[in-house]
Length: 59
Image 1 (cartoon, one colour):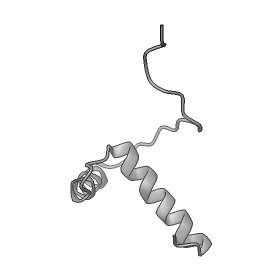
Image 2 (cartoon, rainbow, N blue to C red; image 1 turned 180 degrees about the vertical axis):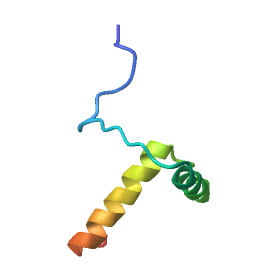
Image 3 (cartoon, rainbow, N blue to C red; image 1 turned 90 degrees about the vertical axis):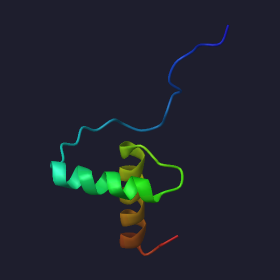
């Protein structure tokens, strides 16, 4: 029988406390994406975009 539950993912969990104003902005940004990502996913995307822009890759 297949094991149920959350699939394994590469990486480490971090805890991040944000001001409510920033969470409001994050939620608004989420609603702009057609797939309505979770808060966690939109933060991942934002960090990825930031790191790519900073490294000059921009893709």
